[in-house]
Length: 296
Ligand SMILES: O=P(O)(O)OC[C@H]1O[C@H](O)[C@H](O)[C@@H](O)[C@@H]1O
Image 1 (spheres, rainbow, N blue to C red):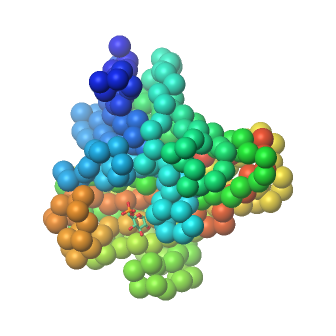
Image 2: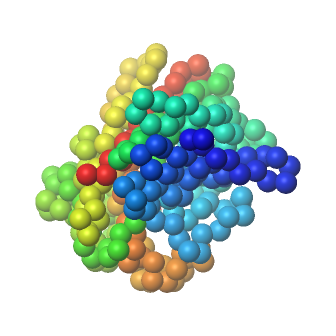
Image 3: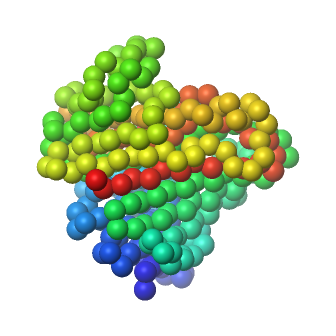
């Protein structure tokens, strides 16, 4: 079977393991539709904290949590409601190039902190070297809404001091650590040697994350843009492609109960999304963003 599910005592699916014939495996918790593990070519590619909490309340620390409909702090809780809600597993399909699994989150009592009616579909396509993720948002409300969204990928590395992120040179960025805005990246390869929290704007289609130990993964943005019918303002805002670059480093790590004190050495977050100008969606309209991770 390309998919194995785990259920709780009431028969509710709580975990889905996707297995491709190549041997690649992805583990998805229905809580947040959080991918907590991606093994490709026999190696774990994602970081998951040993202190991650699986209480179906807190976001899971590591893997790929989904940030929606708000990046960071704001009107509702930090990073929104998608990562702390139960997503229904809609099923799987064998594809020529892998296995596809689908998850759904709709507005409910549990999401009403964000007042809008919406439907979010998350499609995961696992193949030998790729993890392709597609997030679709439909406005099922009677009035327009806006949102920001991001796939908060935690990459695993054996040594963060060897990490290099390429493809960000000449991009404008905001540094949330030093609170400086409108800076321009002048490095060919961005490295980590201190607490980092940056938002790079208008990133190119492909960003390469060199994790050291001959492990390189590309992040490719495919259509972080619209499908279907849109008004022109939407067409404008969706062209944003943001990369957030984050590592809490020593001091902040100690303040995080669900993160080991030394684990900042084993991870780097490089997150693709649209968090600059919020996406605005009219009732009945749909937005779709896609990210493909490829082991190089
Ligand atoms: O601790 P969390 O709510 O999961 O957020 C973890 C991090 O997410 C992003 O990378 C933000 O840019 C950071 O400011 C934030 O600290």
